[in-house]
Length: 195
Image (tube, rainbow, N blue to C red):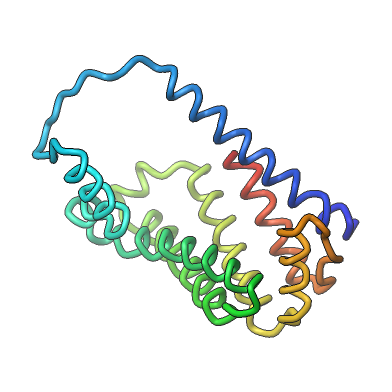
């Protein structure tokens, strides 16, 4: 079971994710171009458009203007995902344990914040579906198990060896601690589901 979840499924999950994203990208590329009907001021030059999109991606400016309450949780959630990926890259290079811990803590905080916000604010509760609650529960689980694994549940040396093995296509056995296996299963579910 450990071999299946720890050594085979990560590759299957990543392959399904890459193929799913490629399929969607090809479908979008084949769609006819939309009519350019600008409803608000938007830069016309490519440099201006790149700057606008980069600013939006880094600060979620539109969401902050539209819904400040939701902005804090959404921004923390998404930045934490980037921090986790950066931390995992650093971890395979021999550093980054603190970065990963901060990322998982931020992911857990952002997910809990968004879930509470969606359920506590009446107008958001009316718009929230069960699927969105399930997504946030999945991310809360990933944040919780990731934080548990990062803060002492798993040996740093074992985690580094496992990640290096996955990256170099010579997988080592996954750390056997239950918190790590739970994290691994939740991340694999995330990759397969969002493909």
